[in-house]
Length: 139
Image (cartoon, rainbow, N blue to C red; front, side):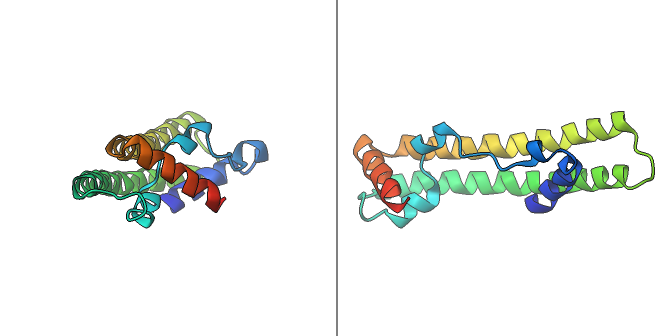
């Protein structure tokens, strides 16, 4: 769902290759731990049952929120597609609709950041150091 929404936005940006270029991973990302990394190394970092429960609840909350937002974004992206299909496009309406789509994308990214912070806060400093070194060894 998100992919098709991004596709619609990227089509709009296709005329400006510089804007559509892939962004590098932000600097702050190296200080956070995605759930997949934690799950993959849960034994090595000695994840406790309480930590597992906290992280699982965070993932569940995130997934519920994101599913709702994905439905909403799909609807708004469809409206955007309809706006740009004609021979002439109303710029103001289109940009307003782009703002709606980007606003939903912002909510998804914010929810994802909240999940990553919750995961990090569930881990001890030793676990964080261990995960950081495991991630570094992978790269």
